[in-house]
Image (tube, rainbow, N blue to C red; front, side, top):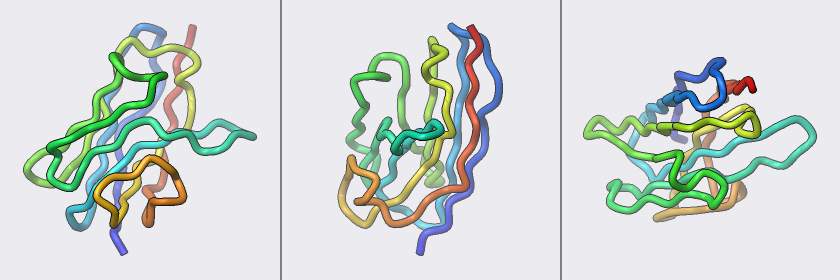
Amino acid sequence: QVQLVQSGGGLVQAGGSLRLSCTPSERAAMGWFRQTPGKEREWVAAITWRGGNSYHSDSVRGRFRISRDSKNTVYLQMTNLKPEDTAVYYCAATRQSVAFRASDYDDWGQGTQVTVSS
């Protein structure tokens, strides 16, 4: 089981930026998801085990960027934030080379709230 520790998030005005961090206990392919009350968890971004390939959903492409550093920490840099980006954000680890569905992820972080005010 991969342990995941998230940090970052908070309240920001529309157009602002935030960065989320997620440190796994071991290297794995990772993803970011978000969830609002009453809705299913939505895939946001994914990165491969070595970090050579990254993927972003249509709703965030060009505004969010997933990356990872040499110490395994995975980041989600969020720019030009919109009120509709408001959600609890989760990082997750998968044993697959990359994944885009929540059901394909094995371990989850504790979640962090991102609130974008208009």
